[in-house]
Image 1 (cartoon, helix red, strand yellow):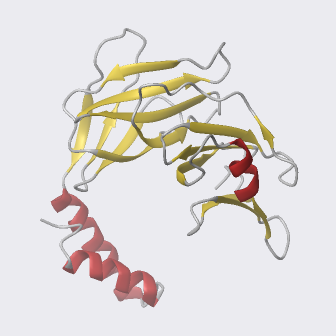
Image 2 (cartoon, helix red, strand yellow; image 1 turned 45 degrees about the vertical axis):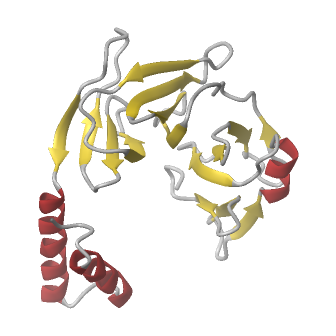
Length: 219
């Protein structure tokens, strides 16, 4: 979602991107499938994508791990921006900083993960690569804290932790691991509260229960 809740970017089952304008009674849907194909160099399947918080820009990660960044202020006529450099990087996750001036991703270098950041107001969009120490498993998704100071990560085995970007060039420390056991307990608490008040979508409850039973959120 954009920060005002009016725009929603969607990764479709066709591995391309749509933008939904929710400002009216019915959503207006804009597909960028053909636009991405025109600007892709070989691979046009979208592996990951992120919407800038103001809703006016989208960055997509293609299946070859290259990036394409384009302006969607007028979604009927998107405009491609300069592409952030990704040579030699095996990118996994993608997120904008809340102010929209920085883009972050994870570089998975044979099990040694790095935080990659691009200053979108700087020259050339050169990546800044910083090693992450003490990761809690392979990182699958990332998100900035609203103040832009910390980045939350979710690892493949369901562990949350935070990394702290810095300008010293040193390895990045991690903090606040949340175990799957803690996460499972929180799911149980939510289920109990919803059951108590008789609220919540049946589909949501069934989904949570299924994950709990499958041990994906537990230990």
